[in-house]
Image (cartoon, rainbow, N blue to C red; front, side, top):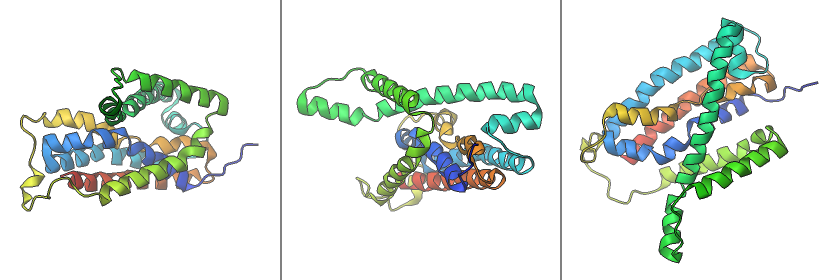
Length: 250
């Protein structure tokens, strides 16, 4: 017999770990540089005009019906029918597959400073980052095949802990240059900045992922409580962190 053992915590942690992802670490500084602090605040608010209603819709549906295993597919198919649920389920499947490839690319991209250090210190040249991404993909595939999908829940707390420490260290750090004394910094950008909606398109994926915790629906003791509370709190918490991040980078 399948035992439902999770509460709201895993839903929140899964969602927040997905929201605060690669775009935040690798592209948020670029966004502040090209559209300014005020522009990034606008991007954050505009993006959450989409994600917050989505989270509220998931919460509303989850509280009005019995929720079993299957996550978003189960909720949508029981609300709008199997045809609509199947079509959206296929789209969700493809989005997860594509997201995994983006995460691997971002993982390899994060090694850029290490690659430069190896070249400067030891003369070791790595011209193709697939040297990092391909072994990482194969290693994760082997782990999934040998340990099973439940491995993800076992490492979730460690991943969130590392994520939290990274964000805390960032906010405690001091800027390289002296902070500006005027308010012009909120609109200051680099020369020849990229257009606002070009930057928005790059940053918008950073605000999604709030429904990741819904996939735990089959393992939750009280899904009608845990899904709405975990999803909405992760969405709002992510928005606050992104706003603070924008002003810190400015």
